[in-house]
Length: 81
Image 1 (cartoon, rainbow, N blue to C red):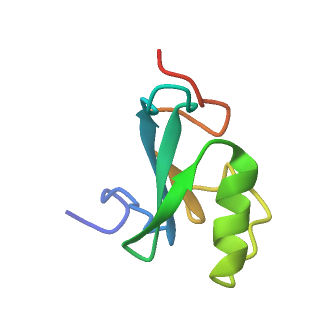
Image 2: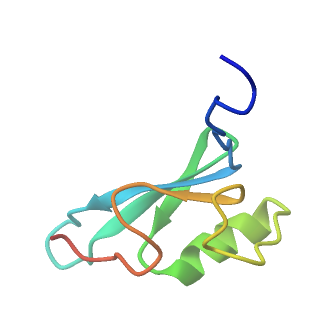
């Protein structure tokens, strides 16, 4: 396999996992990992940006797969399907 044929796999610092069901009376949430470490829960995209800022990461484009990987949905997915 040559370099041209090999797929590019990004390794972003921020990983936002699929939507999880919240406890009764609490909204659904997504787990946020930064540099492979779980840093908290997010219920909105703002929570993701705040977590990134707390770790010194400036996010200019939430759709850039080199910056953020969204698992089980995109930046607009915050409810269970």
